[in-house]
Amino acid sequence: MGLGAALVGGASGFGIQIFANAMRKVPLSRREFFLCSPPVLLSVSASLFAPSSPEPWNHVGLFLVGCWAGNAYVRLERNLLDDINQIRADKGLPPLAHSAGW
Image (cartoon, one colour):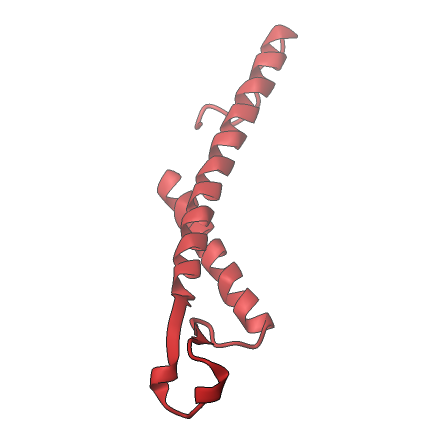
């Protein structure tokens, strides 16, 4: 279940970054450029532009954050089910149905 949750979470994180770029109407994996020369020397030459941080690292970062969130959700759900079963055991009730799979 951990690998599946990580992949679903990672795909969600990647999808969020793609959706954010689509909403801003920019290329899905773009590079931002900034001018690194004085304004007097403006020309069409490509040597005036230097790439800054590439955008695909945002995709990777959000994929990893999504993997962590997917695993954290599974852990949270498992802990919640254990707490509920403990409360039910204290009251003399049987555990929840199908809770042995966790």
